Length: 65
Image (cartoon, rainbow, N blue to C red; front, side):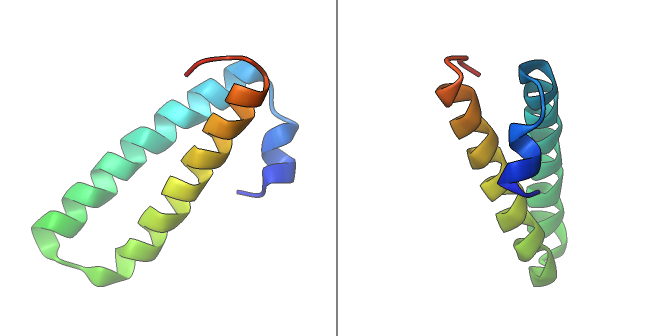
């Protein structure tokens, strides 16, 4: 997701999106570990990047996640 789109979201929406992405990341990591499929690593990288962007935005707003 683009940082511009994330900046438009409210703090509550960012927190809920963060929780959803963290769950998705766990699912993807388990899938990679169980099946060994390497093509999903790109998705994991994108999820991790979006999580980092959301955490940065929350920190800028003074909210701890």
